[in-house]
Image (cartoon, rainbow, N blue to C red; front, side, top):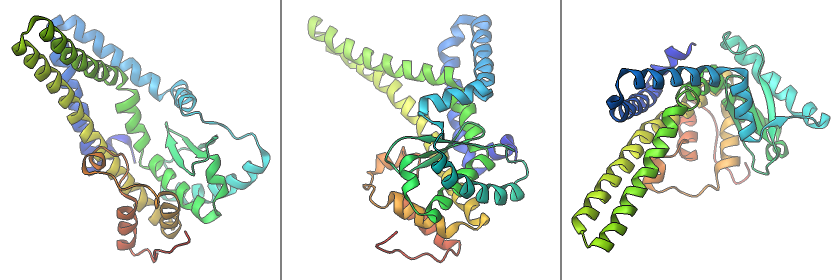
Length: 287
C-alpha cells in the first residue's frame, strides 16, 4: 500500500480537506507578498517534508515522545518475541511493510502502545505489566498503522506541514491578542464598536482553525477503525478487543464537542465494530 493510495481512501478525506484549508489560509495571508514570498513559503514546505521523512525526523519524533531504546534484557526477552510473532504475520500480508521496525519504550505507568514516524513503535513500561495476549492485540493494531502508512500521512500533514501548523498556531495567538487588545482599547476609549469588531475578527480566526482541525480529527478516528480491521485480518481480533477493554474501559465519557475533536473513537464503539466483524468477544469484569 503506498501513501497516495491510502491518502485517497475514505479515511483520508479529512486529511485532504485539512491540508487544503491550511493551504488556503496561507495563500490568503501571503498572497499579498507576491510570487517571491509564495515561492519561499513553498520551498520551506518542501524542505520540511524531506526533514520529516528523514532518519533525523524519526529521531526528533522519538525525542519529543520520550521514547528510548529498550536497554533491559528482561524487557527485551519479554516484548521482542511477541512483536516478532505479529510482525511476521503482517509482513506476509503486507510485503511493503518496513523491513525493520524499531521498538522503543516510554517510561510511564500508562499501558499504551503507539506508532510514530515511518518505522517505530513505542510501548510504555505500564504495558509490560499486562498479559501477553493484550500486548499482542495492541501491537497488531500499531503495526496496522505502519502497514496502512497512517503515520507517514501524519508526517506529511503534521511534520511536513509543520510550517503551516506553526502558522495556524500563530493565527490562534493573533486571534486572542486582537480580541483582548480591542476590549482593553475600548475600555480606555469607550469605543464599543471597535471592541466588537476586534472580538468578531478574533472569533473568526479561532473558529477557522478549529474548523480545520475538525477534519483531521475525523480522519484520525477513521484510521483507528481501519487499524482495528487490519488487526482482525491478522487474527488478533479477540486480543485487541481484550486490550481495548483493559486499557480504555475506565476512560470518562467525552462530551459531544470533545468527541468531535478526539483522535480516537469511543472504546465501546470500537469493540462493537470488532464484534460486528465476527469477533467472539463478550464483555467481562476481568479484562
